[in-house]
Length: 167
Image 1 (tube, one colour):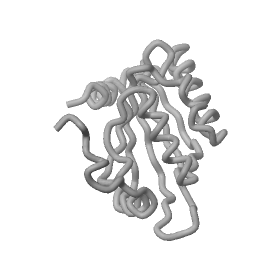
Image 2: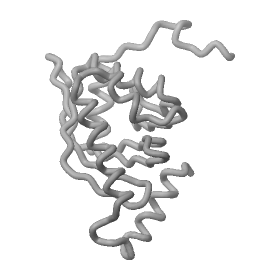
Image 3: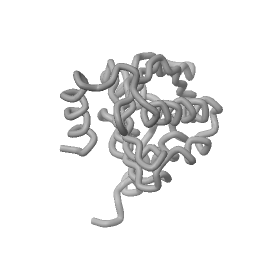
Image 4: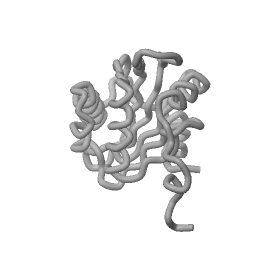
């Protein structure tokens, strides 16, 4: 079980005793995520790099070419370059923090001119460490729509070029 999922379970159990208004750490963490979204909205994927811990792990669910764990800032920024190529946008709706965790709900969509398109609600759970995003887990409302969209718009390299060299 990943640390983030364990933290989420602990956060859920502790929610009943959490202060209703949060505190300075939670406020700073929410502001970090709001600033991250503002950087993302510029359309320049490299603008998110300052918000990422060097050893970040960003988890994307699904069975499509962009799914899986992205490890390290370079892989995460490369993922965002892929999203930018697909004209993917995000509109934050809700933020909540407890300790080093921030959860957001946002609308994510792309209309790049052909079916299938994607437009749905996502939740991201971020773990903040030393003022940077150390871990992120993406949750979405329609995995089938997401998988169909990414397969339609992101092609894999032909074999053997897409296989790892460590066989």
